[in-house]
Length: 149
Image (cartoon, rainbow, N blue to C red):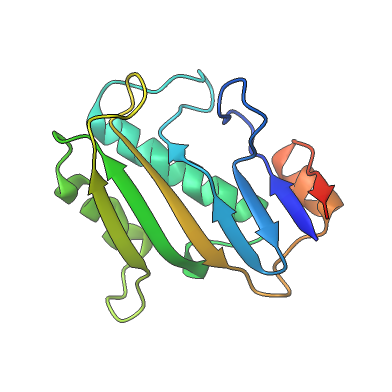
């Protein structure tokens, strides 16, 4: 059974799209970007966009009952002026052990929406005991979790 994951202060505009979807223990996100959860805006400075993007990734993982240790692969979409070193700073913070880092792919694109200069998506495999029931996830995020077969 599939369940949708929502986090407070993060959306895909008016589109009916959750932040992530979980089937069994597999979690996949849609586009995750550096939206400030309090203002609903993407800040202009690149370091702040990157920090908030990783913050939103962490909140999505937590809402689904996981953490960065469950990430199998991340794909980053970067505007040409975004230095990979900026991603690397957060990458090594969240994945400090070089023998236990997820796979990563970076795609450079000048076609990102509006003021976004970066976004990512990811695949994670949650622990069976960590995957929350719908009610627990809703309580953790403040957002409804919907299920569809």
